[in-house]
Image 1 (tube, rainbow, N blue to C red):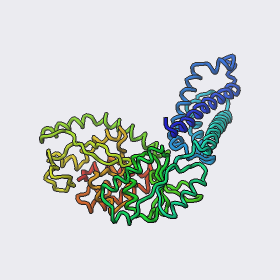
Image 2: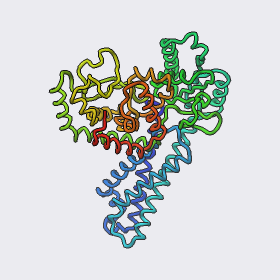
Image 3: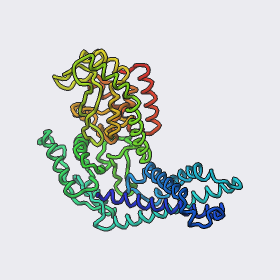
Image 4: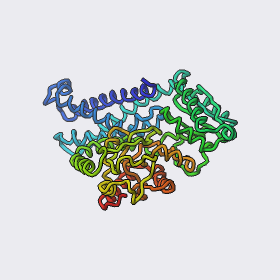
Length: 471
């Protein structure tokens, strides 16, 4: 078990205990206020009654779901007293309201004041018990972080004075220790040594070093390298699955909405974190899974009809599979209904156009109504994709685009989507130049990600499909 999961489980464990204690405390107070002793005879009988135990199980399960949706467990290292207060207060408010509506409101009480008293006791006791438990775990972990054994292991990739400054700040910060410091090849070195294999070997060396040191984070600090080189390295380092942070002086772009992890010392930009809040990310994940599963079930008759039309019209398989680049730059297999004739790309990767002769007559109908994209609901269900997100591209085209738009790697901080702002506002791209233009919409989506924006994109996608405005 990784250290991240040990710390995560510490919070999950204390929250489970706090939830049991909070609801049990409330039931004791409720027993006294509502004079249940007249019915049950004793507190023990009341607490051991099947209805009381079932309500305890249901409420604790509900509470754990609320905690998870709040995003509290996503990053156990980013905790503070303020975050503990705000998340505990918001979670306890939601739980208290739901319990009040489905549990307390059924009680026969003499007045509205009594209802409000019960709600106030539930809300206050739940918040205090939950907050105290979380503070205890946070303090325990903070003390651990100060010990050499539990400090976060940092691999620093740097050059020049900025590397020395960042190294000094990391050591002074107290909760981190540099386990390896590696030089970053400069643009001058690349002018004489650069080849694709050179960069690949250099990146593999960095990956091996980070893995051998069990690094928790990678920090890059440079002013002597172009951001193009840094972005190409980031593509290789993504496979580590750990935060990668850059000094702001390593990023020449102005106006990027990127997450900064501190206001003290050298602020570091986490280029592996999206702008979506932790709670919104969890809600988006849950909606993706539920809606994709429901969609696959409800649309299964349509799937059978489409499969029959494809097999009737041309030779070849029903589904078309292709490797695309997804979250953290990892390749995955995307599924589509086949809309082209067999062996349509014998000469290599080609972008589709309006009057593409490779597209079958039924394929044109599917593309107009985006029916060929429906099998990607399976990609959403297994976690490769999301309903809404930047469209995934092939590595062949990414290599050509990244030279002009090195910030393209940031789009891989989120799962690619079946539909996107770019698909709604721009549509399919037939040339590399059109792909560059369409990427501006993907970039806008990334910088303004929210559940509200996802709903808007889905609404316009449905409108596009209904009007048959797909390509």
